Length: 130
Image (cartoon, rainbow, N blue to C red):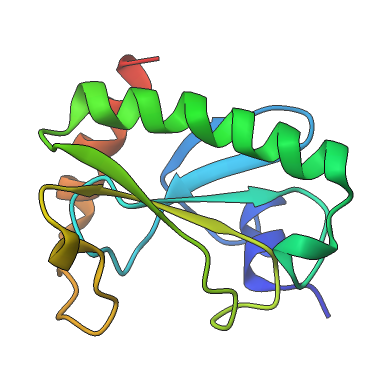
């Protein structure tokens, strides 16, 4: 059975897409730690980030770097925090989270509740920053 991320990539489940190329896909996390929290995933399913071969892992990080640069231009923050947890969904993914302090990257804290309109506004800010 396809993961939720594969279903998003295939268009079966809607998302707020930020970027995509032939190998990777980036979209807003619908349970964000901060505005602009984005997930970067490979288009093919693999459960664990470090199961990717070296070339694909390197290319994924380069893709994530481009996405992070757009987020940083669009969302006020000091940095883009990077987290790989890998337990929530069995599909390798990288969290890119706009942060102003270390505590902003605490996944135990309360997550934001945003309206669809807010997500669209954030999506538009980031995509226009590319």
